[in-house]
Amino acid sequence: MSRLQPPKAVLKLCAVACLMVGRTSSARCLFDALLQRWPDDGYALASRAHLLAQAGQTDTALVDTQRLVHLSPNNGRAWFNHAYLLEALGRWPEALLAFSRSTELAPELDRAWYGQALVLIRLQRHEEAVAALQRQTALQPMSPHGWYQLARLHADRGDSGQALQIISHLRGFEPGVAAQLQRETGLNLQATRG
Image (cartoon, rainbow, N blue to C red; front, side):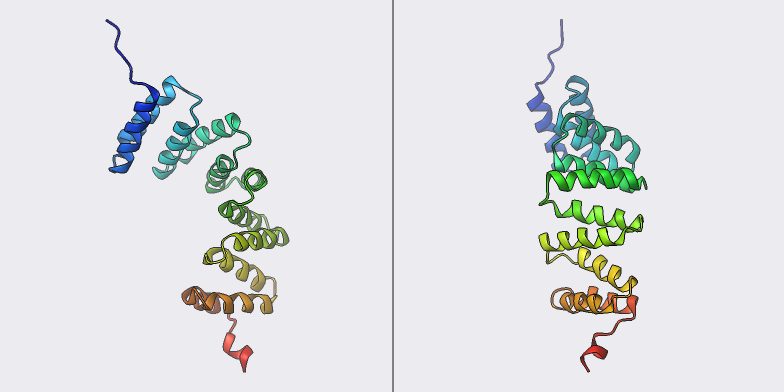
């Protein structure tokens, strides 16, 4: 007698339910089963890659994201996830290409601009990093991360005026980050106001 196998939708639903109750290893097994039967399922590939990355298995997760961008070459979010893993592995030139592809396909994805900027900083391509951070902060003006990196870049390049403007801006909604930048850069807003 042949054993009936559950349909794809049931396996996905079970995997999602496992994730909702914190049973990640069970969800991982279900995604493995899904991918054994349907190796090109984008949802299962992305989900398993995420679980693998969370478990510190970045190299293995990268295999899934590589397959996903091969299957969906016009998916900006898939390229972002792939770039993120490449960055985590220190593969800067490849990460930059993947982040660039992500921002090209999904220009509204602020995290891709931020990741691209971080890689550009690592590669000492500061002018391009400034442009990427400006794009990221325009998309996500209340997030301190891009502003922090932008202020650091300006300070490191000797443009204290721009760095102070950003510190002043941050003071309005992230005073802790503004204070941290003042400590790290040695720039003082009080001295410029006197």
